[in-house]
Image (cartoon, rainbow, N blue to C red; front, side):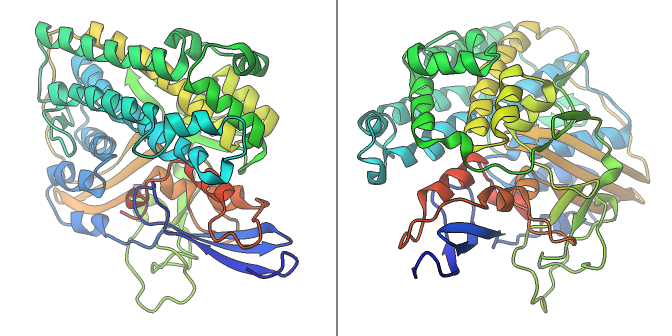
Length: 487
């Protein structure tokens, strides 16, 4: 690397501990990032594969987009198909679906914190920090005690999918009208036991406190007290590390958040649907969503595309695009999605206080994920108790010749939407906007960077460092799934 005063271009990637392929081009000026360009280099074409097929083929093909988000893809497809048929699953179908989707999301939150994010703090670069020895003992890749226990807890949690979904990944249990697998009284006992084991791991190892106490954290002062005098656990260790490294000042994006609403029920979603932009709540206008191809290697750069009119056609002659990822925008603006967006939209007071103080930072993203983890496991326990083995689990519907519908859900990483067009009873168009498509989008027609590109601006880059650890903290705070990004 040249002198810090000389503008420099740096390519960071490929990234380890990231699902899929990722490369980030950085323009560095005066030792800080002046501009970032995020490249999703893998094109796969699942949306094109679905064109012309029978509607139910979406339940087989779409989940193959990703092996770790497959339940979320199945759910979005099932919701789009249910809307086309005009049917609503019975109560058991909703509860079981919520349990299946939540299991995958909770497993992903566990994986992110223990295997993807925290191991960076066990690196030799932090050897002089007072907390480094503890971080290394707990989170060193493949060796840390917390890593091993988290893997064991995650493996136990996935037994929920064995009981309710038959297998994971790529289950066919989720259907437009509900689920194909009924749970009996014995299954409810086993499900409760599994979730009890997950609760014990979280309370003993991660939080050092009851899940309900974590879920009810409400203000920044209370979080500060947890850092200095709270129960011993990896949550407190993270708070200590974050304060020392000032992670609350790192990786701020736009302050605009989007959620489609997670875990529907008879009284509404567990986590509400909507937007928060610069602190103001708003309703979600699906008609205002459009994808820009300006800097994507796709045809159709002349205008933004609403998903019902969208295309996914590679441009072999492209010389302007720098990624296969499109640039989704809501009412023309970039929005961030993920656990932080869900908790912001739902009004979780601590997350809102952190974002009001620091913006959507590395710190607030990780705290939001850990708060959501506790809240979701508590909700899952209630859903198991509410299952009624004697009641219906699925309903059937008829296919129309023509339809335009959307299936909207929340994967671990954020808002996931499937837009379906049927013509003459077959799929005429299928467009997917995944969470990482929102977060890792390129610049749009107006030249506005995507959320990660914006979050990387101003990050310090030490001279001679080809892979700055601060850049990796920002990238990992979004928990990207690159294979979902370009389908």
